[in-house]
Length: 190
Image (cartoon, rainbow, N blue to C red; front, top):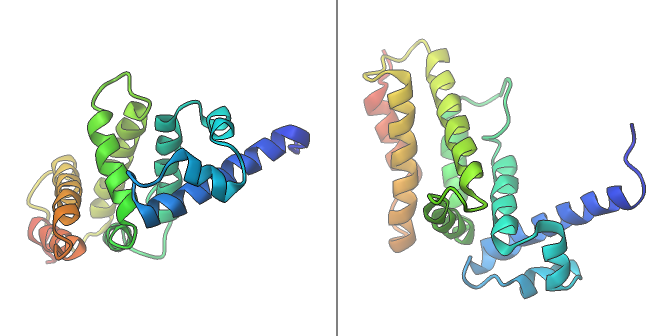
């Protein structure tokens, strides 16, 4: 069934808003990216943004989902790159979009509240990332993990997320380099 009319236009407008918000937040930062700025880039009013997303928090949660699509970590199925390379690539990309790292970190804290619009996103993302890392290490038979797969995935995720906080304070932190060393220590090659 083909989507037509105002519904299709609404979907297209929503995507345009998300892409613009990714760009504005990535360049200007979470605190400096107002609804007004995002709306101006798209050519709508701030009220129109809220028409598509409900609240600023819902818009920002949708931005994080869109970022995950761009990173490729959300995509299942066969990939040309190993899980480790995909994960490290996403971490390296994060260093190029500090505003999105700030948005992720701030919403992660706020999402601890089950009533927050991003709560479900973070539950899903965390489970998806753990599943990806667990499956990736299971597929690499040339490794000798020192931890069970679920614990390994949680440690890698905790290290990556924690390093983002350190990097926000000190841009000299080599997030990808440190995560790579942790992976090698926890799952050395045979």
